[in-house]
Length: 118
Length: 107
Image (cartoon, rainbow over all chains, first blue to last red; front, side):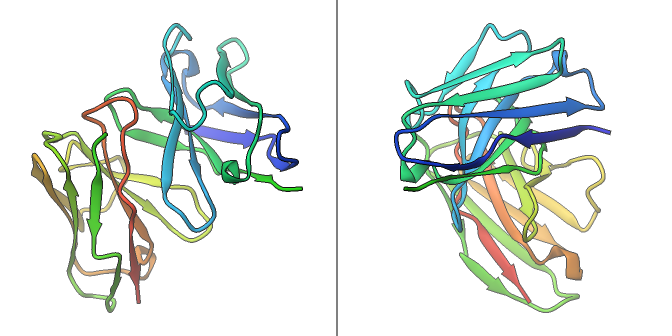
């Protein structure tokens, strides 16, 4: 069974940094493209970052470009998102999800909440 | 960037009814359209992809149709667990694979 579990969320001050992680199990992680998708409180879904199976192709949404770095460690079945210069509008639940790149997001984790506030 | 517009924003219905949700794209996305269900407090779940193909484990009462700019998600005989938020998403253009704003299905 495909399982994705995010961690690393929490309260961070404006201008601060945070590293989110996503642990994958139940499938061959190294064969799958993965993404970060976020959802602000009471709002819809926004894709923010994509990485292909071997890490050679990466895309970011304009909203996080230049402030975020997506990476993966296939040996550890893990995905990360390093975020800098956090703003109040980065407050959201952050999900990791497989798929993307001209394909739907087929499996999702349970999400981790990031709150940016003084 | 493509704009995905879902209607209605909220739909109040009764269990056992059949409903249709709409999703419109600002330009053609061919059949590269997915539907997701998000129950309260849960993460999204893929229901439909390629406009009309049910994802693994999705009950047959869910069906999708459409192509180009007009799409529909139909749910026949609503069950209590179907009351949730529904999002459409186009993946014909990447990035970003734009989501609609969602339709809330209420009892």
